[in-house]
Length: 317
Image 1 (cartoon, helix red, strand yellow):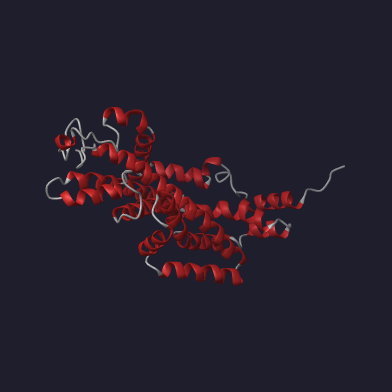
Image 2 (image 1 turned 180 degrees about the horizontal axis):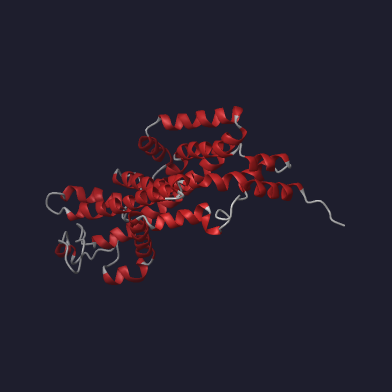
């Protein structure tokens, strides 16, 4: 005796049937969205260069404890006896980025500052992405009053200049790396919510969604199994670019004395400390500035490459 399938299983089967390819070429697993995107991404030299640079920065920052103190010196240590002798030395083989006013190696501090910047970029973007996905999904799927409330709330957040809003929030909750996570993460959700809402609106009336709904699938299951996978591409692109923006915001906060608390190294703090010596020892400001420039540019180029790779209009390109 054959028992009927449960409603969610039947809904999944109907949705899969609605999405089934109609010809042999499209049935090839390599012709999926992500498979095609990966092939196109490999052809984008700038995106590949960005990936290599990001991986290089991540590996160097993650393994810093294993070699930086022995080769370059601890980032926060300064020898009082030799501080005057080693203060503000020009770049050399021993100190590739020179030394600061306390005789500390600038390259060592830039490497450890990369940990903070990357952590802030990834964690803060993760927080804002999660909030944006949840609120964007509710607004798009249920519409009506929920859509009005969430989108008007997003308008209120977007009405304030972002950096000033973050500074105001940091002034209220206090300095520190954890508060930087919270401020950047919480205030960054409206843009992601709008992008995800638009993506969901374009697919929620598709045949496979109607099939799942007609078979009694729950709203959570429809969103998670059928709508989200077909809407996530735009979020991947936007979140990748947002990491660079979060790094810039953290650097600006640290430059103003509202982010990382000294003596912990941060790219923004290093620039703030080096600006006083821009005319005499420019490397103190230029080196951390180049670190910010190259890293943020890499995330921007990667996001741009992902946007082109995930564009279904370029499927046959």
